[in-house]
Image (cartoon, rainbow, N blue to C red; front, side, top):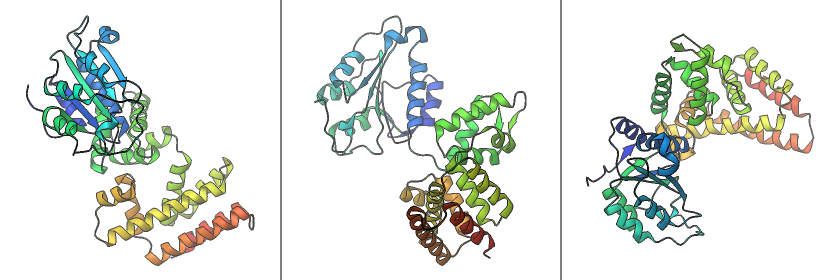
Length: 348
């Protein structure tokens, strides 16, 4: 048996599956749920015949089921097909996280299997964890024999490539501005983006390219995305457009306290990105530290340049006072928020 590569991205695996290059054991890990699920789906399509999936596809949740059962299933000959696929979810024994496991697992059976997997089965460990415990014997064995695949959050360029790939699979192109707008509207959720690209591809019919106007027309904007766009209009001093968004939100009966909380979150993000930028951190490092998508960091850096550090501190302090006044009923909530926006729009 050939040893697995030390590391592959999910996109590498997708390409190899198209070439019918299938490894007997995969360990998929990371926090990007969509990429994990999509990779399992693509492995299933490559390994198991659709008409035989009821016989040759097994999924075990290791929080509820014994690991031995999954290993035994992988050692069972496929029925009405050439290959069997076994997916073992939530192998918390691969992490350093201290969990009160409901199951006591016999790790020795998996260690033996990894060293000598059944040639007629594909075994997938699906670990939705950011990191694996490198000190553990089982992790070391997996790194030596299995195909390790990390599903990590995509950076800005990777996200753009991902969206372009989705559009290409639908026989379409997508404009850069349209892709960026899609990231904002979908809050960087890859599963939501994938759904919207399918919908947009159907909507444009025979046209080759998805445009910014298509995205704005068809993709619904949630409250968080509306607040993001509102702040974007405010920081760029687009008074009419900013107030239009604000009044539209009020017509939709959005709660001013909730709106103010989201505005405060965005200005805190501007303050944090400005601080980290001044310390010499790059976009990727800032995104990692703040646990937000790199594309949001990129936009926040651009917006933060329009304010001094003192101005951002003052805005955040003002929002804290407003929060108190709103929640204690000292002043009208809508009026407080309206005056705050007007003040920002009038500042130089």
